[in-house]
Length: 322
Image (cartoon, rainbow, N blue to C red):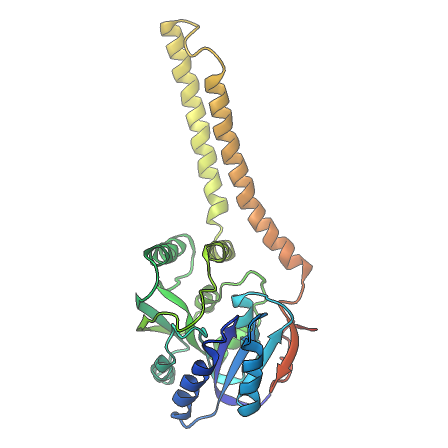
């Protein structure tokens, strides 16, 4: 693999309206550094003209490297494939929608040259996003910081620069349900943030609707915290204490008001439904962890590469070639 100074990784899923401008802005910025660089575009099963546009850029500029997945594997897996193939001393993750400005990369590089191994971008403001998405994002980061043992910076995304040492550690972490920003925090090293205003999407639609956001949150929580399992014991103790108190209260009331007080089965049915609902919820949470174990035990490759352009196979990436 040819050594480069900087590797920029951008996952692509139906981004035909953004690809050319992304390349123009990144190439202009990195050319100004006077150092070698590569742009790795990972086609995550796009169904528009994105694949052809990516190949056209690669044919025009050999610094553009293209990976085509055999199908859609998801954003975090696409980022992982880019990391597996990156050769740079510093690796930058950025989305293709241009909400994360490439113009912030020089400031990240300055922090990296100052001695930081991870430089993450902090969203001081998010333009063009609904109050619901902004509020739920803030809530998510604050909740996950409370229930995990690692410190994941709030109001951050995957937009970040990582030193080669961090990249090598991430390449060794092959779990299937991935949460890159959490994995980067878990790695450690010296980290810092830079603030920026997140712009509106330049073109196209968001690739993270509510359904994917919920799955992303579930992967993050189950991947970095046992709190959902541990909290079950507290619910069980609470229900047990409530049941004991109910027995005492009902017994006293029946002694005072007669044996017919609290007669009928309505109370029993309500309590059974309450307890059953908690049991089913606990089984669901337990099932999420069991599903992760099953997913890892199958040991399938994280992704399948259908075609490469300007790239050699990554060493020990665990990928599969279709």
